[in-house]
Length: 95
Length: 171
Image 1: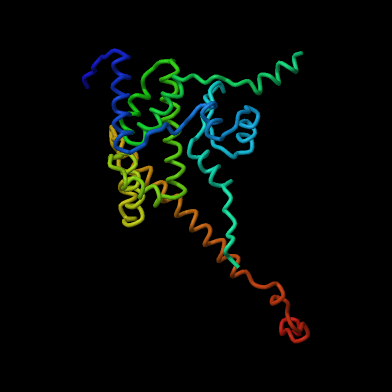
Image 2: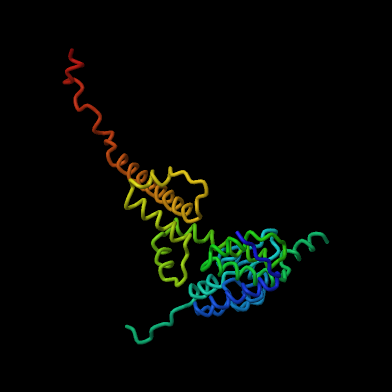
């Protein structure tokens, strides 16, 4: 097997291009995994404590880097969380 | 003082490494559509946050697929079919599952075949077969347990109705 050496920067640039192409073909515009700040924005909360509470209660899905420094949140689970908490409007005309 | 520091550390907003997050998302996405290439990238040695994130993201997707495959094979099958990209590894695994289901005679032949350098697809095929066998065994065990439970005689019927008329006892 032949081995091609390229610079790390060039390699990751190539990966970026591939990812961008995949995103454009699949229609996906946003990343699936978001950091704590973005998760709070999506959840419309400002408190880290609430975010941790949601995490501990299993209301949102997350993944933690081995070693525990970085925590990423599953955007889909946040959207599902909103859906589960949505209340249907009262139907006034119904008898 | 120490207690306060502990509490603070629990709630402090750990600024996540952006590089790790970006790498994680790349790995997660690439693993979905280009698993073979992703696997090769995962072999790269290094400890920068981007690469670490990439590996973790790809690994997470792989785990999700494996779990999903065992839980609901048909849903995954449909998902793969709807994808424009070819996922050879997953396809081979599904083929293995279907092969074991439709042609059980082939199972032992494939599973016992000795190869010096089995291809990745061949390994996936075998994994699919193993997965089917595992599912079948579980179904069989459930059916066996149910039939054993259903056929268990009612203890009240075992009691002789009239011991005096038992011929063995009369003798």
